[in-house]
Every structure is written in structure tokens, then in C-alpha cells.
Length: 512
Image (cartoon, rainbow, N blue to C red; front, side, top):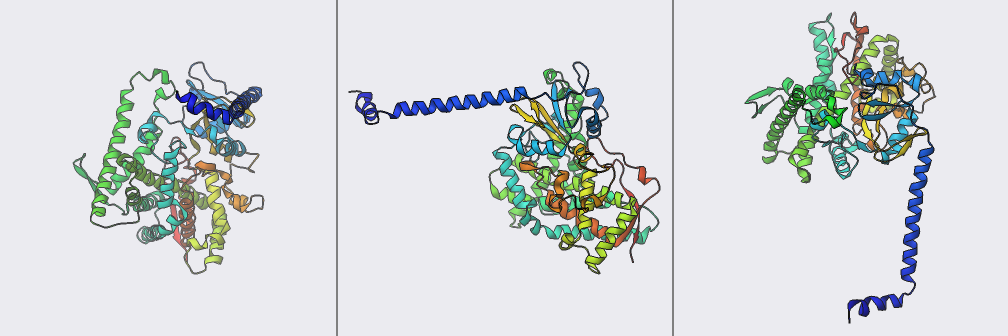
């Protein structure tokens, strides 16, 4: 007798209604799912299409974006086309979001439909195809590496362990500023030169365990100074990230070579890789000798789940992100306070009342609402990342009551959200008081969405706030700041960021 007769048939005879019931349930489930999908498509089809910004055939709106100040161009179109509109960049269609409500809908409510990153060719090379927390898609790799950086560097417990680095940073900056006053009391101080160096130091300590002063690079056959390391790891990649390859807009022409661009970005990547390998090689020698430090590299190596390339990229990410965005915020905050002496005096008076003869520390922050308002108002007006890197709609969805077809790219204009006149009174003005007038809940200071929202909210928000607020407080507590002649008009920015084109120069006077 065969298997069917001896085994399967008796089982069916024992449960005569099982098969029909199972088939019925399965059929109903499939019918329900098909109806659900069909209803969704019908509902989306009934939604209006996103308003389009008129452009040219083939190239779309590229000529209107040639100045690279995308966030300002996007914001200028809001009054004509509304808070959500679409543009064409060659063969791509991009939905641009310029209001808090729609941006949060994209980052939270509709996140599952648009969680995929869309990177330019430059970023694909520099991130080694999304091998970073900030640029990876929301998948298992992203969840794992975000857990790693929160556990080792940026989470609440990790920040407690790294407290000594932040305290050292602020003391060193204070000492350098006092030394400048002692030697050149009438000369303007280059704020960026001092603060940037300090931030790079804390980034190296958190990432590698030590503030490296030089390193020998085998590929170069020579040693690099700290300043040269900073250029290779931070300055050059920041410039490279906004270097446009025209083939990004016309992928069907990607077979055409762009040799000069390819050579430049590859050399930048290889130099960065060579320096990171040299830095990691030195620290591995330390680890092999039994010297363990509280660093991101030590943690990642101990996990034993990542490749050498992945570890190198993740450690580099911790260095570059800690070195740049916090600088942008603090430089603009000091610029605004020096430009607005009344605001500076108000902050100083509050610090005097709360801290008295003590130096401003992280423990005082909860008692200094005006200091927190200064920080968040600076984030609002001078968003360090004015446009969030593009996302990709991998299925039909809706945003702001409009139909977003699969294949669309999504650009969230943080700057435009924070210039929304329906959300903010006189948004072009820098007014910390707007966060203290009772209209805004103190618990909702992140409404500026400068740190993003939802599952992709910035992992470094806590460190940015601790370093930013504490350093601003100490600098105002110890010095009176005013802009040097001509500095007030020095507001040009670099490319796609809000980094000041020229470093801030200010006259400082120690407070008595």
C-alpha cells in the first residue's frame, strides 16, 4: 500500500471538515488582503497629485537649483506652491516637504513606506554603500550598528562614562580663550579654530580612546600631523559629500565616464581609508598589549560581529559627526549672542543667579531655561543639516493629503519647516524668547525637528545638547562677546550645509 492510502487518507477521514475549513480560511484571507490592497490603491488614486514646480523638458528643475543653496530655494517656492510640492531633477521626481506636520508624518506615520535611503554617487563611495548608521536603510544592520553607537558612545549611560572628555573640552577652550586675551587683548579671536580643534579631540577620544597628535600612514610613506588628519577625515569628505556627479540625475547615462569626478572621489576615499587603517592599527597594538580604553573601537572589536571595513567606517562616522554639526550650532549661537547684546546680557544674568561663583556645568542646565532656549532657537534658525538626505518611497503612500507614487524620492527641508510663518512668528528673526512665552511646551523643544524624529531621530542629540549648552553657558559666563567690524554681514554658508563660509571672529573681554 502506498503512503497516501496508509497515512494521509486516514488522517483526512479522522478530520473530515479540516481541509474544507482550512481552504475556506485561506481563501477568505487572500480575498481580504487583495481587497485591502485594492482599496488602498483606489483611495490613493482618489488623492490629488502633489503640485509640480514648472521646469524644463528632460532636465526638469536642475537649472533652478544650480546655486546649491537647496534649502533656501525650496523655502522660496513654498509661497507659490504650498508646503509640499514636487520637482524633477533629470529623471527623478522629488517630493519636497516644508512643514513640521508633513515632515513628521513622513518620519513617523508613513515611515515604513519611505524608510529607504537614496544616496548620490559621492555618498555611495564615501559611505561604502551605506555602511553607516546615518545613511543605512532601516534594516537589521542599521538596528545593530545604532545599538552599538548608543551603547558605546551616544546613549545616556555612555555619555555619563564620557563626561570627563566633555569637561576637558570646555576647560581647554576656556584656557585658550584666556590665553588669547593675555597675549592679544585687542585682536579678534578665531572662534572656529579653537572650538573645532577641541571638538576633534573629543571625537578622537570617544572613537579611538586617545586624542591622536600624529600617525604614520604606510600608503603615504610619511606621518600626518593632527591638522592633516582632520583635513583627510573631516574637511575633505564634507566637501566631497556635496560634489555633484551629473549622472546622478540621468542614471540611464551612467555608462558615460566622468573620469575627473571619479578620480577625485576615489582618491578622497582611499586617503580616508588609509588614515583610518593607520589609526586603527596603532590602537590595536595598544589593545594587544592589554591596555583597554573606553572607546568605540574597543567596543566594536569586542563584539566580534563586524568586518574590518565595517568597523573602520563606523569609527570614522563617530569622528566626523562629532566634529562638525556641534561646531555649526555653537558658532552660530555665539554669533547671534554677540550680535544681540540684550540676549547675551539676559543669559549672563540668569547664569549669575543660578551658578553664582560656580562654573557652569551640566548639572545647571535644567535650571537655565534661557540657555536651553538659545540652543534650540539656534538649531531652528541655523539647522546644521538643513535638508535631510533623500529617502525613497518603495510603495505607494500619501503625505499631506497627496498621493505619493512608489519610486518617488522624498526631501525633508528642515530649514523650510523652521521658516514656516504659520508655525513661527517672524521666523527670520533669532528670538530665544519664543521658547519661553508659554506657547511652546518645554518638553517639546525638539519641535524644530533639527534632530529628526521617529525611528531615525539623530542618535547624537544628547551629546549635541550637553556639549552645546554647557560650552555656550561657560563662554558667556566668562567673557563678554561682540562681533568685530564687518562680521555681522559675514553670513555666507558652504554649499548644502549651514556651516559659515568664513570662521567667526569676535572681540572678547573677560568678565570681572
